[in-house]
Structures are given as C-alpha cells and as structure tokens.
Length: 339
Image 1 (cartoon, rainbow, N blue to C red):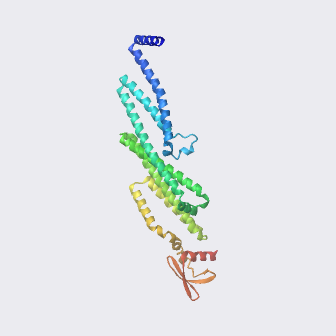
Image 2 (image 1 turned 90 degrees about the vertical axis):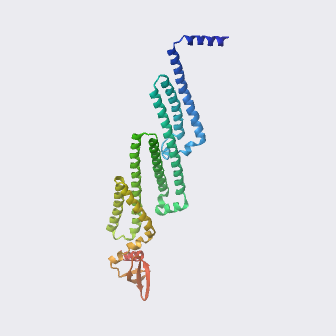
Image 3 (image 1 turned 180 degrees about the vertical axis):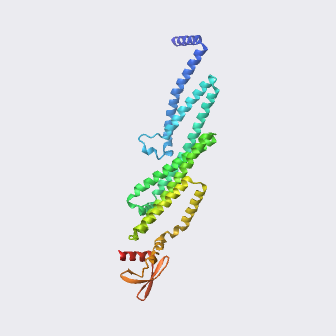
C-alpha cells in the first residue's frame, strides 16, 4: 500500500539520522507545538473566563479611561500561554543539563502565578468596596446631604468622590497584595522597596484626607461667617488659619512617625466628641456682641434693650417684657442695623 510504503521510507530515513539530528528535530517539533498549542490554550482560557464573567468581578476604575482596555481575562490568557512556553523551556533546559536555568524558570513561573492570584483577590475586594461606595452615594440620605452642600454640582461631586475612592482603594489593596506576596516568596529586596512605596502612599492618602477635612471646614466657616460681612479681615484670617492648620498637619503626617498618627487619632476623637456642639458654633461666635458693647438692637420692628449676653443666648427687654434670643439672631440684627 502507498501509505505503508511512505511510512516505511520515512522510518528508514529517520534511522539514518544521527542522534544529534534526531534530538534537534524532536526539540524543534516540541517547540513549534508549544508555540501553537500555547496560543490555542490561551484563546480557550480567555473565552471561558469571559463567559464566566471574570472581567466584571475584577474590573478596575482605570479601565474606563482607556479606549481599548486590557481586561483581567486577557492577562489570564497571557499567563496560560507563558506557562506552557515556560514548561517547554524548562524541559529543553533539563535535556541539555542546564538544571539551574530550568529551576529558575520553574520558580519564576510559580511566583508569577502567586502574584497574579494575590492581585486578583485584591482587585475582587476593591471592586466590591467600589460597588458598595457607589450604592452608598445613591442612597437618598446621602444624596440629600450632597444637595445641601453643593446642589448645583451633585453629580460631579459624586463622580469625583467615587473615582477618588475607587482609585485609592484599588492602589492600596494591590500594593498590600504585592507586599504580602513578595514577603511570602522571600523576595527581600522587592519587599523592602514595596514597603517603602506602601508607607509613602499611605501617608499621602492620610494627608489628602486631612486636606479634605480642611477644605470642608473652610466651606463651613464661609457659611458661618456670612453674617459677619463687616469683618472681612477676621474672616480672611480665620479661613487662612484653617487651611494653614490643615497644610501643617498634612506635612506632619508626611514627614512624621507614630507620634503624629497618635496626635491625629486624638484630634479625630476630639472632633467626634465635640461634633454635637457644631450647631451652636454661630452662637459662641456671636459672643462678639460683648466686644462691640451692644446696648440695644432692632428686632421684629421693636427696639429692645440688651440686658445680659450669655454664651449661647442673650436676654433682651422690650418695655416691661423680658425674652431670650439666640446670640446669632441678635448679632445678625445688630449687623443689619450697622450696615
């Protein structure tokens, strides 16, 4: 038969080849099969992961800013292709007695898979946190608070908060995953470098948080100081002082150590304890009635005599009747009369 004759001729020619030639042909065949088979395996894994929905589970906030983003399934496909090629290179190195190089290829492949799985877990956790933040921003109570602060820029403010939070959480979790992976794998130099980057990013995040608190305080101060329109110097000084304190605290956090973080924790605890007194701040501020030595004010169309100025309320006398008003109301009536 022609097929059997062809096979016999091929085996005869194969027997005439030297062992070196046979080994070269076998290695070339294995290498070409790995190149083609690895590519096919990557395509199969890519399609399976896309059907599974892995891209939605591990989506990052930075993927929306690129025209053709690389999805996590693409990275997994590349890893599968690289793993098959690495196995073939390990086999070739072992055949030629290069055991050290073969072991290095195997170790590198294992470390890449370990780091990839750690980053995948970090991305999944960050995606869950980002979705939780997005749901929180859509809550009616949160939307009402945002409308109270900046009604004309609610959508932009919500989007900015979501993008900032998503980016910060993703970067921090990925750095933490890389730091843990390199530490577990015994990569000391890389672990030290990532630890330094981690501390820098953490300090930058805390400093940005402090500056954000200063900006919010600045806006609140502007709202409270609108009644003091005749005191622009005091208002500018207070606004400058708030931002200066926020900048100084941010710089301390960037350059300081554990003591600075302890001071920040004490400051945060103090703010939490004093937060219920926030609504009384304009009344405490209005104690400036004593500075101006106010004797009488015009309220409700009636001239009232000032009897006593307290920390929160002022005692007034209109004819034979005594009444109390909040300090902010009395100060506003006095400033309207002055203007």
